[in-house]
Image (cartoon, rainbow over all chains, first blue to last red; front, side, top):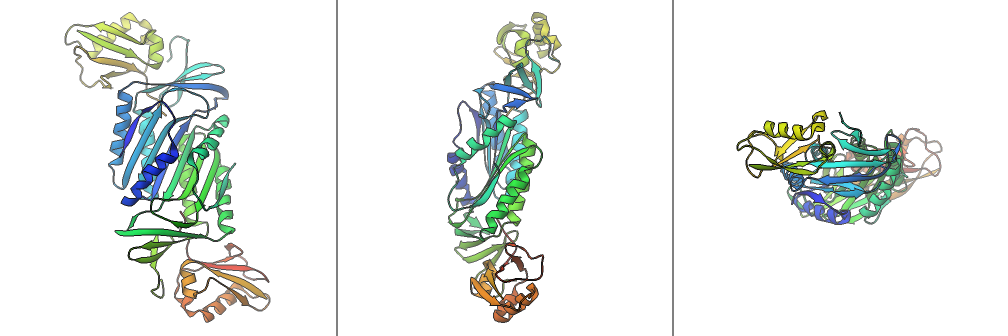
Length: 152
Length: 152
Length: 79
Length: 79
């Protein structure tokens, strides 16, 4: 069953694989996953942590919609999307997307589509704490330094 | 470190994620995975099992080359490829590919490239045991029934 | 009528508060709410990319009603 | 000289054996080995797509040498 939501802890990948592999009974042959992780270095500067905040319940609702809509496409059997919130250190997973599909091409295309939607649709916000200050990350990766007055 | 080889048992995804996430220290922000699983139904027929045979050491060497070559591309930090052999029931993972890259686009593109190479390069052979007989799977998914004389 | 306003990310810093209750005339539009917000927190005017969500959705209907929750957010950067 | 020949997948079924040792004149070419194999196992002739690997690689050099391992495989279907 497709599912998308905000989560506060890690996801067990082995267990998720186990669940998605059940769709093999319906002809699923390929699972495609994307896992976002906190970068330890951005623009040559050390990152201490990323703090994620979700505007709930709307963020979970948006993630659920993405999962259900993309899972309803032809040859796609299941889509899971889990977005973490809270303070995450470099190397920590921030986002999990998993797709089960009949064939590899469908799986990869669905993964790519879900990923782009997750980047732009759910109201999730991130603050990057680096050695050179705190930065809001907005839009497609723009960094806005905190405490500098206007941001634009 | 990039690695590719034939394996006889399951891969622990949580552990692989743990290892790949270390590349965050070098700026990795995205991990992309593909896991092939045995389909329970092919051409409307029930599949009992897939039997994989690898021509070793050449299959492992080919998988290792793919991993190393694709990991040497720009913005790609690591590539792992594990191909299972033996008798696998529907739902069992057959192939694991994992890529760590600086950004999501690079990760997905590398995953797709590695996957196509794994489909065509390593000398790995599969026999599909179905309710309606045994079939060799050759090339891009052609089924050749056993015990019917010539195959072409 | 009263609506609740929430600020996120750069817009929270610009307003200096996480949320506020704003009193508006019945049937006030999103544009009137924004005027009121810009008046109270002039720094919000410096923000170029402001997305307004009404009850979690991009504000399609322009008229607000009692109890609506309005969120000011920057372009999303998920993942 | 002797070379070892391995058969995989459909070609194993066609030959009816997994592997064989084949005696050839010194410096024999891959084409001569194939003739010998087709003579011993005529069913191999029915196979359209036969890929020849010499020591695990697509046979670029045509001359075989003592101890070479030759594999007859169909187009690969990994994953």
